[in-house]
Amino acid sequence: MAVERDTFFDEWERLSVGARENFLNGRLRLQIRHLYDHSPFARAVLDTAGLRPEDIQTTADLARLPVTRKADIIRLQQQNPPYGGFLTAPAADVERVFISPGPVYEIQGSDTKWFSRALWAAGFRRGDVVINTFTYHLSPAGVLMHEGLRDCGATVVVAGVGNTEIQLAAMRHLKVNGFIGTPSFLMALIHKAREGGLDIKKDFYLERAWFTGEPLAPSVRTALEKDYAIDTCQAYAVTEPGGVIAFECPAKSGLHLMDDYAVEIVDPQSGRPVEPGETGEVVVTPVHNKIWGLLRFGTGDLSSLITEACPCGRSAYRLSGILGRTGDAVKIRGMFVVQREIDIIMAEYKTITRYRLIVSRIDQRDRVKLEIAAAQNPDNEALKDRISRDFQNRCRLKLDEIAFVEESSFQEGYKKIEDTRRWE
Ligand SMILES: [Zn+2]
Image 1: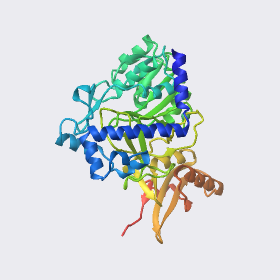
Image 2 (image 1 turned 180 degrees about the horizontal axis):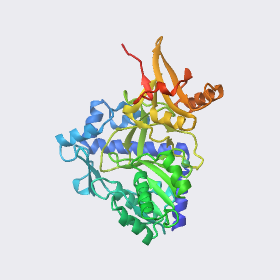
Image 3 (image 1 turned 90 degrees about the horizontal axis):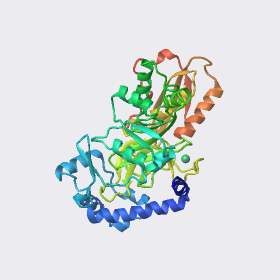
Image 4 (image 1 turned 90 degrees about the vertical axis):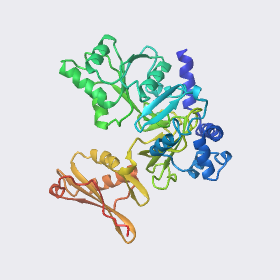
């Protein structure tokens, strides 16, 4: 059985880019038809835009519809309780209702087969004993991960959040080799173990950890993999559209998109799609959900799309990672730039102690100056060239000037991105 499943996943992951696109667009067309016929919300969105279901043939056509936000879901559910016109099936078909802050009532039928791809890619298999530390009530993470793990064949230790001492004891008694949760909770467990005189590497059996819900900081990943010999994988999940949107493969260079959603990266102000490689807001339309009729959900998260082939052989396009929230982005020469990306670049330079990106506007053109304070080797041209290249590669941003400045010029609470442009 394991062999059959392996083969299936392998073939599915390696589907040609064109075949995957056709599959996704086919799903999208069926979904739009289904939503139009069954969801008052979706029907109103299309009617208001003056569109018929058949006008939406591909993901690109979705740009003709408005972006729906969490506040819209809350408002619509209050106006039209309990589900706000998003329900697209008889109420008796609703298997579960989750309650997220708002409150928002999120409904699900049972379809976790595809979601388990993400856990399968991370290496979870039959014979593994995995502690699931996501909460099992109100929000979907606990139940979803549980079902995904079962679908991979693993045994699940139903832990939920908190009770670190009980969790640590169970991890030893049950020889738990997998962890599911947030990076900070795993680090808390590791620290707690150390307080009790135990070493996570020697006294436990943990081989792999899978995270979602918060970003995995590169330094935390390095510590887990190098110091504690725990392999790590992360996924990007959003509860409103229904769960895991993208997942890491063993190449760990971006997150492959699931085939249950049409995912767009858009300009957060206009809702128009941006080019692959450019930063924008992740907008998600479920294309395989016969219960919950959400269209173009604006996540508020920033990412960019990687369309180049992944070394792992999976053909699904990748998200570069979550770079921040839409409020964190500064638009420079039509491109969104996020502080977190610059932090990642600068972290590579151990001698640089502080930086500041100053954006100004001269002669109707955005000008970008990077000021840096370095512990040694000031004014090194080779260093400047390297930093310039990194900005081009990661942020697609051409720096006009790099200047070395005294560390004392950075005052307490200084802004790393200083936007001095005035739009008058
Ligand atoms: Zn890959």
